[in-house]
Image (cartoon, rainbow, N blue to C red):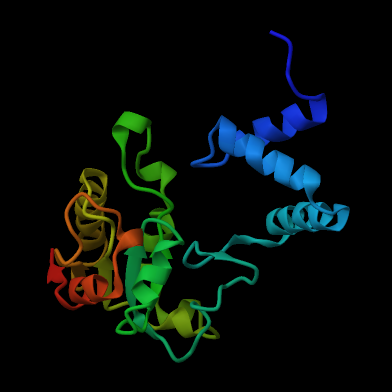
Amino acid sequence: MQNRFAEPMSRLIEELRKLPGIGTKSAQRLAFHILRSPAEDAAALALAIQELKQHLRLCSVCNNITDVDPCTYCTNPTRDHRVVCVLEEPTNIASIEKTRTYNGVYHILHGTLSPVNGVGPEQLRIANLLTRVLTTPDHAPDLPHNQPIEEIILATSPTTEGEATAAYLAHELRRARRDLRVTRIATGVPAGSDIEYADEVTMSRAMEGRREL
C-alpha cells in the first residue's frame, strides 16, 4: 500500500512510535505538531536529544543517570553512605526522595529478574552492588561513599518480578557479608503495583516499616 505521508514525515512517525506509550495516532499528532512548530523549536528539540545522548551516563557507583560521575547523591557528604536503597529504575528515586524521611544513598538495578523475558542476574547491575558492600574505606579514601555499608534496603516493587529480585539479592548479599543488615520495604506499597506511582504517605510507611529478610 502506498504511503500516505512524505518520506521524512513517515520516518519521523516511525521513530516516534518506538517511544513507550506512543501508538501510531499519537506519533502522527506529535509529528505534525513538530512540523507546524517554528524551525527553532524543532532544532532545540533535536539538540536536546543529541545532548541527552552525548552528556548523560550511568554513575559508576550507583548506576543512576547523571551528567557528572560519580553522581550528586554519591558525592553528597550530608547523606548517610552507610545505608543503600536498592531500586529498579532511576525514576524510582523521586518516590523515595519526596518522603523526606530517607537520607541514605541509592543503587539502581535497571530492571528486575524475569527469566521469561530473558533477564537474569547478568543483565542487571548487581555485580557492582556486591562490590560496594565489600568495599572498605581504604579502597576509596577521597569519596564520601568510602564508609562501610551497614544496611541494604531492598525497595523493588512488590510485583512477582520485584519480589523474586529482592529474594535473590538478599541471598547474594548475605553470602557476601554475613554482618550486613538486609531489609525489605514494608507492604505500605500495595502488592502488584509499581513503586513509581506510590504517594508520599504510602512510601513513607513502606520505608519506616521495612523488615529484615
